[in-house]
Length: 323
Ligand code: UDP
Image 1: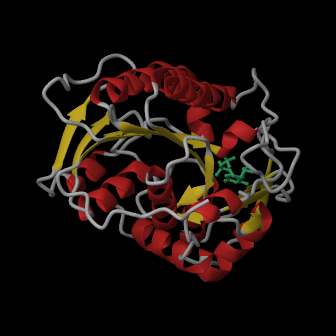
Image 2 (image 1 turned 45 degrees about the vertical axis):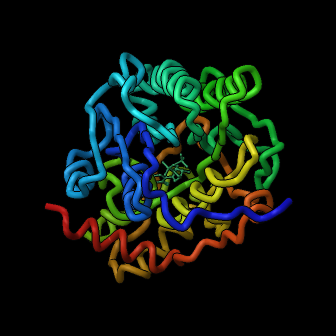
């Protein structure tokens, strides 16, 4: 497979970003504003942050609409749209507990509405799917051809199954209507502007370590995750958007840690006096997770650049600055 050619500028292009006030999409918008694109951002602030939108709005090429994409999209009849990023889903296990129906609706009805815009405008569409489509994986590391081990009625199923549905609908629009589509499966990602109370492991451990509080490790801490710093993730998503393969790509960082190792490492990097405290694990917590990036590396020279140490320190600086 030939390597992709990335554009040096996107001046004159318009990009629709669903979920623009979210953590990953906010960084993605900054990246594309840096390439000169015009961005139309959408968010309902159910988990997104108004301060991210304020920050992005400093750039005159950023336009924002507050809306629930699964109910109604703004009128785009007069807009030219070249690219669409479907990034609107809440993605933390806490969200799965608190807003499961909104998650299912945004990934089904919301994705459908965005695909209809892509079809009408002739825009290229990217679905931000997730490593959760693999469920509790029986093969390791996870390759894109693995079809997963998902509990369809478990507490994570609102996210896992609706993202599987979103992938299926994306491929249906591609096959049936010839819409130009891409799919990325995002693995664990962290970085500045995550919600400190988001419930996920890295913000929890950093906020606990900064206060020298106990670090809450769920279960025995032997489950693994592979953590990607957000700028590396944005680069990987960009590479996939500009390749010509509609089938799914894993995106992330393959450096794998047990959760206990992650806790010990964060304590060390931040010089904290915290101790580890074990807490009950949630149902269906995947035991292992690491992306196989062979497919992504065949189309691009992608290598994550930010080390775990650097990423943790940058994220901790951001949390320290929050009041
Ligand atoms: N986890 C933990 N302590 C916390 C938060 C999470 O031990 O305070 C564990 C959780 O059980 C899981 C892993 O860290 O095994 C990653 O959890 P996260 O919520 O970040 O995302 P997931 O990858 O499970 O979607």
